[in-house]
Length: 463
Ligand code: AMP
Ligand code: ZN
Image 1 (cartoon, protein in one colour):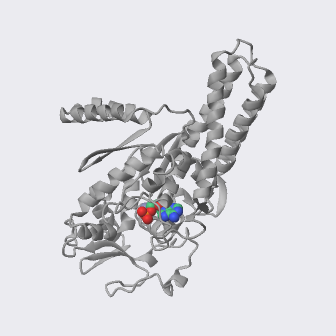
Image 2 (spheres, helix red, strand yellow; image 1 turned 60 degrees about the horizontal axis):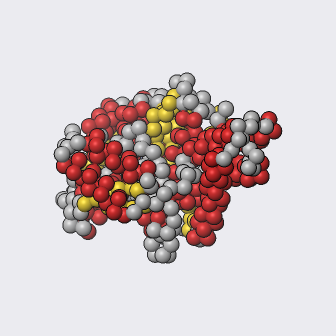
Image 3 (cartoon, protein in one colour; image 1 turned 30 degrees about the vertical axis):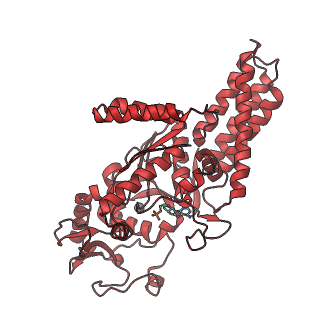
């Protein structure tokens, strides 16, 4: 039985899917105006691990994660760089995908982009207006917050306290300062789409309500993101979606705690702001992934280079243990496995599952990988047979796979070999043989090489 800390109730609850054997899950993705930073990597890694564990338990997971590709910050960036918002978004989506690959984050079942879902947004806004939950004013459309009874149920905020809250901007077009924007009228130099209320663009919150509905339906199992999204983003998503559907939008709300650097909020001005690339220049993506999983997702995590170094050493221990099994297997006898050894390994797997069942406690789950290493280092000797070794290796593979960790040592390939493969892939793409191009990309990925298609050509890095 999997238990999930549900922000909605503040309790750990047993996970009961809407449809037996299936999980419908939506994770709010990044706004693509820059390279993603290590804080953004936390929800990516954590919820990828949640998905992997559900799949290990036999669930079929429909995992949707969006890219917010229209936003003030993207437009500002485009103006600074003398380009357009689409180019900015394309650049950073490609970079984000390369970062995700470096962190062994699997592709979502669907990766919708806000700009490709505008029709659905217009439709939902029309429904909200028809239902009395929204109104148009001078080309803007606002959500009538007080018209939704459950407002505040996720964040625990009381609607009357919010009125005096400093975060609510005063806008003359709004009936009530609590109302939030669904549609913004076009400003010069901004991307815009036609709508019944004139040219404009959607507000951020409506994007996720619509993309979640389109790919997962009106009711979903899990909606997730960083804890900063609880209010107002997720609260507003609930209001929009439930005002339309009159159904429970998401049953479980999962939020990861924040990543700090040297116990301080990460910020450019403090000089403690790191992109994934900056970390990958010093450490394998796997070290960052393991570091992120070494703390419970729900609480904060403190990034430091010392912490990364310690994680690297710890990872080495697991990899050596695993490699040693491979070595010993070469000369192993056919002696059957001893019952006590089997039991010790089974106990590690059971403890691993218990940890993951307990609100995806990856820190405790990782401990079991170290415990397994300890057991193997003492119990597997030159006398051990293949049965015991294979059993232990399977246990390693199972745990590592759920956590998205690669524990096999990879052979380092020479640059020339990699460049030749990249050239072959480019040629295949030119010939429109995309299957061949993808196969080469996969081949490179298996060697630990990640590609990024940029306007200047293909960039590659080892992860
Ligand atoms: P954004 O692009 O700012 O919307 O962020 C994308 C995702 O990263 C959201 O789920 C945020 O909550 C999350 N996030 C941003 N900064 C951090 C941080 N320092 N620690 C953990 N999660 C973060
Ligand atoms: Zn969202």
